[in-house]
View 1 (cartoon, helix red, strand yellow):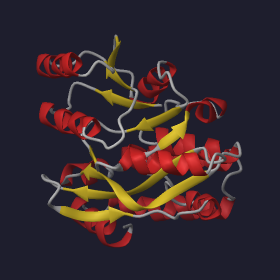
View 2 (spheres, one colour; view 1 turned 180 degrees about the vertical axis):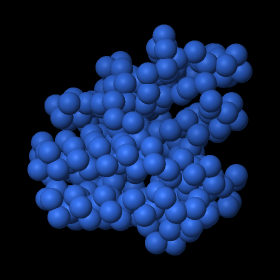
View 3 (tube, one colour; view 1 turned 90 degrees about the vertical axis):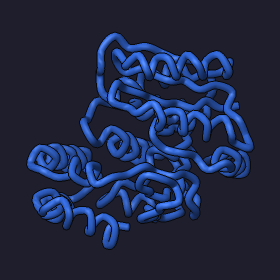
Length: 268
C-alpha cells in the first residue's frame, strides 16, 4: 500500500497531465491513492481534466492550495495528506514505465533498511520515442553519498521514499530550484539509506527551454546559496564548496546551446 504525490500548477499542459495520470493508472502495481496538489488556481482546462479523472479513479484525491506557493511548500502540504508510509513522487509532465512501482516496491520488501529509492530516467523531447539522453546515477549508498557532494544523487520524479524518514529529516523546504536536493542532503546527514535501481523507470520530458531555465545569473545565485547551505551543514568542505561554485558558474553563463550540449554529452 503506497501513495503517489503530485503537484500541478497553472502552466502545466493538459495533455502532459493526462499522459502522466494514464501512466500511473496503467502500472502493473497500482497505488492505493494519488494525492494531487493544486498549487494555486488552475486553468479551467486543467480543472476539467482533473475532475474527469476523479470520476473514473476513486483514489485520485485533489488538494487545493489558495495561492501558488512553490514546489517545496506544495509537496510538504501534500505529504501530510498521504495515508501510507511509502510515497512515490512524480512530476505531472512525465511518464512512468509500466513496471516502475512494482520494481521499487520489490526493493523495499527485500531491503527494509532502505529509506529512499530512485532509478535512472530517459530524457525525451516531444515523444517518448525520441530519447535524447539517460540520467544515470550510482547504485549503492556509499557511492550515492559521495556523488551527492557534487551533484543531485536522486532523480526526484522517480523517487519513492518512506514518509516518516522524510518527516524526520525536516520534510520538503522552500529552496527554489533545489527543494529535492536539499531534502536528500538532510536525509543523508540524518542517516537515511539510499538506493538507485540501475535501469530507467521513467520518461522525463525535456526541451531547450529547460536548459535555458538552468542558465543565467539568477540560477547561478540560487546555486551559490545552496552550496553555501551545504557548507554550513558541513556536508561539503571549503575546497569542495569552491570547486562546486566555480564549475557550475561556467555552466550557467555559457550560451544555451552550449549548456544543452554539456548536459547531454558530459553530465549524462
